[in-house]
Amino acid sequence: MGAITFNADEIFEMAEQIERNGIKFYRKAAESFSDQAVRKTLLDLADMEAEHEKVFAGMRKEFASGNQQLMTFDPDNQAALYLQAMADGHVFDLKKDVTGQLTGQEPPEDILKTAIQAEKDSIAFYLGLKDYVPPRAGRDKVEAIIDEEKGHIVVLSQRLKDLK
Image 1: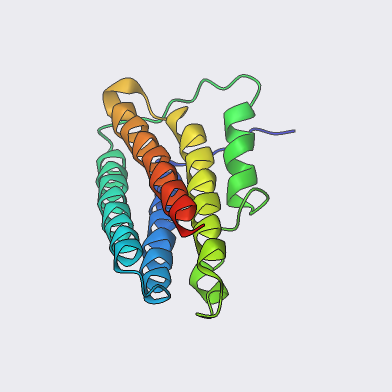
Image 2: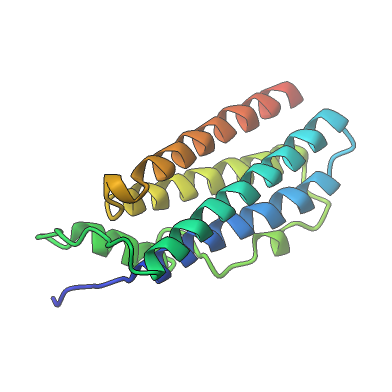
């Protein structure tokens, strides 16, 4: 099998798309809740995803300027294959509009479970992305976003527990 190559622009565009999908999902999901605390939580999460999108856009711009290089040492091609599986939609589909799944008729529990799964999917992608970003080029930013996404799972899980 030949080497799979991604350029920084493609990788960070995928990350930005994940965040845009999250923003749209959380804003649409918030409309489904009459509980103001849950609505606020979802809108706050949308705002956090918007901040993540800005971070990834900034990283993409930095790499595009040629000031940074992606790490390329991947002798077994594992990191590249992992990202390729993500990009091809085998893990989750970046091109799918998750808000299209929301009809407004779903039980609140289902919406929160969908959000939790989306957060898990984004963490899975960012863990692969992190392997490509050298420490001097912002790996800590990717790690910080991973930590925030984990925090989102905690918040969503608590809201889910509160509904029961």
